[in-house]
Length: 391
Image (cartoon, rainbow, N blue to C red; front, side, top):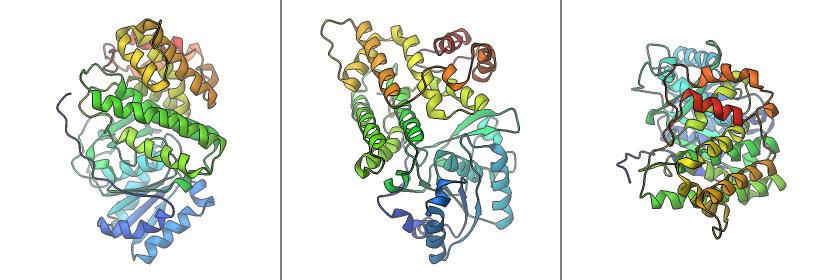
């Protein structure tokens, strides 16, 4: 196990009706004047936004609102939010909705106290030193942003470049997780969310670090439960226990408890970001295409790790199989699950053709010679071959 720092300051209020505590929690963490930041659909139709407004008002918290967040959240709305916060002298940001709303709230929180362009943090030109406090109310089990140190934004003003920032400053101080808020999530987006959760486990599980038995076992507990809960939620969208486990698994998969003490990869996410940035596909759908092919391409790098993936995540029997054969069977079992829940299989399913590979490649490897990931560091040629496997 490697040395590590682990910082997780988020206070979680989990369960039925917990959005009624929004005002209480805002006050507890110092919020007096807030920006409520959300999308445009379900939070309004479900009455969630009205309940949040009521809770804040009853607690005596002043707030203003900014809606309009879309999947793969846009920099242009972040700039608008920063301007509102500065003009209204707001002291915290509350993201309400899916991961995109929370990621956008995080970007606003970073940008308000910064004298430069918030995008400096996302393209690596600056390191965050201060941010407004952040809260979140999550309506989709997927990104884990409610407890993570990451935020990803697509810059619609600079060619839709999609970049992320990692900083403990963007971990929400409080997050409200009510599984009932996920009941109305459409099946496709429920499946995309489950795929995203599984991908966060995979990016940590496939590591070159040895002697990580504890975090291996934690990952091997969460991964199968995500699959089980997703199956139930897709069959019965109002199954509370399945939705609750899926929602909490999303948090556990990305607050980094599963990644402590081990080298992590993240090449599949970097490759997928090109798909969602250039073609605005759902992040989970893009991952469903990329990850099985990344696993296929890197199988021979560490057959023993893949064999363990097959036996522990899918319960495959090792008898009579080499590690390579067992690892390949595990990848196929993963593909079968993604197919079962209705995820796309190929770039063609996403409307992306072979002719688009050079465009995607420039987004993944903007500078010749860059290496992608850590499990098996990928050259530009390697990434090209993975894209070709995705066709």
